[in-house]
Length: 279
Image (cartoon, rainbow, N blue to C red):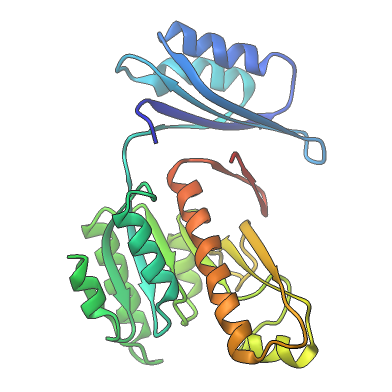
């Protein structure tokens, strides 16, 4: 991302919003670098994202009168600041490895502060990137303590984004609520589709012609959070389970990376159970 500030907002749709927002930014000495807007006719809501350059100031305070006038929910963010991120993983490392490579290559505007896992499989991978690795084994008895320790790490590292990179444990409703709006999961299907264990075996047995992956925000309802990104790949009868699995894992990695990038670039605005993504 370039330097500057990013304003994201939502409010009831009405005439004059764009004029008011651009005028307010002009009064701050701002120069708009990129802007996007969306009018949701189903809900009557208006969404906007503006990337602008302006002299240092309390932009939120200056913008408050406009926000009150239009009943806006809004946020200003520093466009140059990488999002402090924690990645969670279990025993499948393709998404973790992809995120680490993209981050080290400068392709993801995040700052990976820690990796947490319920297994030890990837501690050497974390060490190779000089990232702290926390092993939090899980049993039904130890889950509350492990989740409390996770929240302590989130607080200590000032984490703003938690990425479940094929973390194969269900988070408690209490933890989901604490992480609402800042935890992204990758699901191994084009939702709604084959849920539960061995999804590619289920897909293969059903002779599907498309497989995919879904990145969504974590909520208290399993795999029902607002969808951020999805993708699919065409397959056919000649492909065995191993081939489907390999293709599926590639899709998962790409879809999750897109979702993380868009979140870190403040391109996502929640719209009830859905998202508005300013690509």
